[in-house]
Length: 138
Image (cartoon, rainbow, N blue to C red; front, side, top):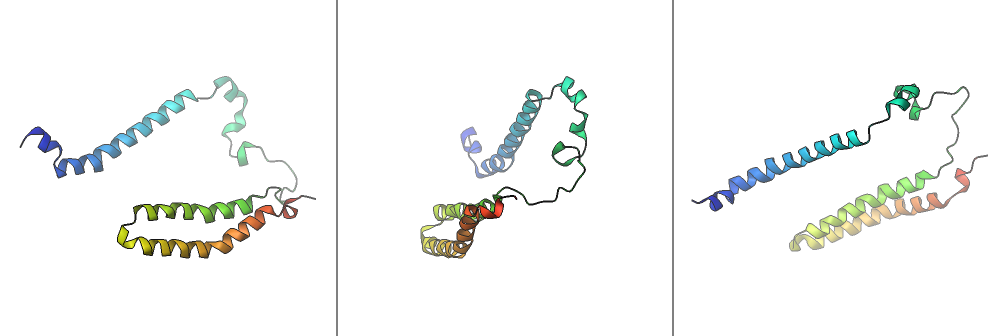
């Protein structure tokens, strides 16, 4: 058994795919995070002045007196519903691409059923994102 046969044996290929490649990806990710931390480190002169940066406030802002519980003036609800409805549909398209030919009809049927189930949610999300009067303050 030569070197080439040993390198392409099922055991070595399994070891490479399950151990070596994930370790390389994790190592590259850690190296990138460390590099980005060094490149984007803060300025010490600003951090000494901005002491609130490390205090536990909402969004880094100190609390102000008064009643701040009010209607939000952003129409994110409809867009959030649209994203939560469309994202699984897009992900499930991958099932059609990887499905074997024998099961392709069943996968397409499942996909159409999911689309029909999500149709009312999509309709509501589109309607809610276009309804501006609910998001106007005043």
